[in-house]
Image 1 (cartoon, protein in one colour):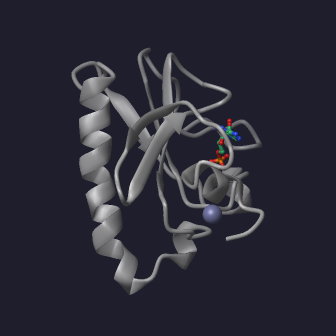
Image 2 (cartoon, protein in one colour):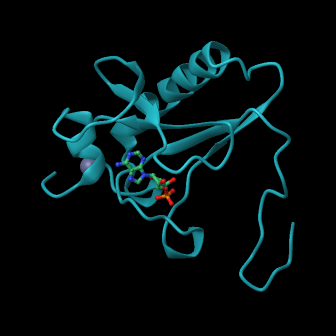
Length: 121
Ligand code: AMP
Ligand code: ZN
């Protein structure tokens, strides 16, 4: 997909700090880490959002969990714990429209959701 930041990263046209790569997935350091460990897991296939995942993609996204588990272990946060987060659409604050999962950990994380009217869940 032209003009997609994460397609550019997946194709190596835009630099990133790679943590893991195989034929299907790339994991790289988030440029603005929200915690001591903050990487992004992307499929190399361009899918804009969770809403755009097709029937043919679900098995591949299932495999993404295998990558998340492996990378969490390699980054030393498997036992201490972590979050795997996908933002979908405007209310979530999704900024990059190429599906990605934040793998975040390395510290005690705060409230999962804080809505814009400040009600923490
Ligand atoms: P989201 O709000 O879920 O779309 O998250 C997008 C994430 O991509 C943010 O955490 C950004 O810090 C991160 N990001 C944006 N540009 C880059 C980049 N060039 N390399 C690595 N991470 C990036
Ligand atoms: Zn893309």
